[in-house]
Amino acid sequence: MGYHGWAEDIVQAYEVPDNARAVKTKVPVLTVQGKKDKIKEVPVKLPCYHTAPPWELIWDDLWLFVKKFYVLPFVVSPMFYHHGGKKHHPPLDQAWVPQWLQYGFINRAVTAFQRGFQRVVDPYFPSGEMDELYPSVGNLLCLSAHTVLIFTQLAFLASLPFVATLPFTLVLPYAIAFILINQVVCMPLNAGVKGGILTSQKIPGDEHWDNHADESWIFLNGVSVGCHWLQGNLNRLARTFHRPIIGVHNQTAGIIFDVIQCLLERCFYYGTIDTRACYALIAGALADDTKKKVVLILHSQGGLEGSIILDWLLSHCSRAHLKKLEIYTFGNAANHFNNPKIKEGYVVGHIEHYANDGDFVARWGATHFKSLVSRQEETGKKAHGPGVLGYLLGRCERQNSFNGRLFENKHTRGHLLNQHYLNRILPLNKTLTAVKEIEAEDGSFRPDARFWRGRAFHKYDNDSVAENSRLWKYVNGRTPDDVRYHRKVNGYHRDVNGYHRDVNGYY
Image (cartoon, rainbow, N blue to C red; front, side, top):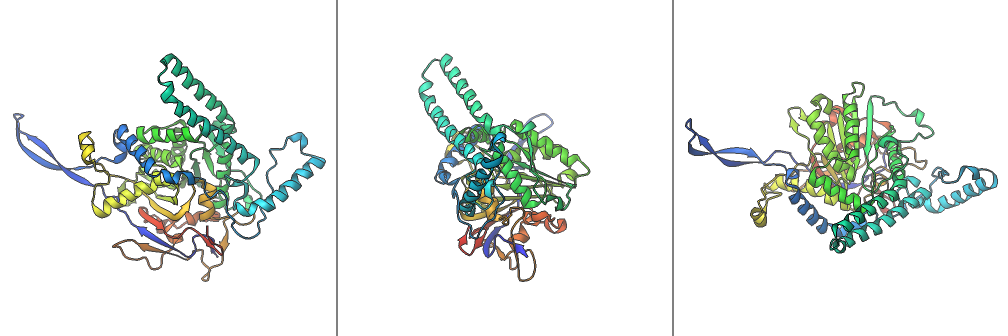
């Protein structure tokens, strides 16, 4: 048997060492009398890019936003696609039907309608109503609310230059009133999460899953995700890895305002309430001696907040505790990801990043900054040199730090976790209870996918995605060999042809 994903792909791998770049600077050498007798050159480590002044980061982020803007319209593309074969997904949820109508003829009519609806729609949505754009009642309500929020927020931002000419006593109430109204509109989206924490729902048959009581799996969502979509993400992850997933809710304020919040977090190193809540949850799990492994899954803005959380953990947790931590990101929006190198390898047990080449958020985050690290190490050039204008404005040379192995799916669009990432990497079976598997010739669980060392490097002859991706080893309740995988932490892997191919072509 083998996992039904990433089959027959060719993958280029770029191993990127995280050696800190150093330069020499001149300092005066003082005598006993305090006189400057001579100048001495001493080596100093270049400061990290993400520690630059906020105004520099804002300028860089806005310019990067403009350069990658052409990919932005495709964050929800494809909205659906035919994935082949007949599907027999579980019946749709009827929670939207009032309790007093769930009986007799009405209940039978609703059930019959849903069955017919599923026969038409399900072949285009591999994970059923867990897919974010599946036309279920809950998803349609979320999409409607976000559509209203997008237009109203854009109108509000467009009005600011004109409103700014008015007296401050009018501008301030106008801004406060809009923010309050926006908050009221978002309340239904965020309602249903008690204490900012949500857990994956149980499904029939999960009592037969292997017990992983010594593990803690935590998920932090990205932009535009309310309670309904968070629950879908958690349920999809639980069925993929056969483990209960705890979700920390990064509340949405609408897509436009969420992007503005990302700028504040990236440029001002600002930790939101949910960032602090997730940090507390992870730190507590790491300190729990009954937990041998803590797995953090991050998506989109969650990856950005996760980079801040990781910095806090590196500052306050022991190395023994951090060795239990593993981090996996999808469409990561962060501009850095630290993992200091030590004698035994790296402080954090394992880090992997997954990105679609046509995902705007990934291009604005993980793939861009990982490519800068790759270029920085391979050519020795300044990845973030100040340039002529930078020197005039007082900018200094800095180095990038983005640790973890990056798997990039070329020629693939989309940013949604379930629909554009998990469905392509780890598609579920017909009953949506486990990852689909196929029979391999040698009886192994390894798909046929080779890795290549890029440019001047040599070729991996008998390596596959499953061999290099630790995440693959967790599907359907399995556990990877720690001795085998802890040695592979940092690298840059590019998937050239796609994650998965079936008889009809690449997904």
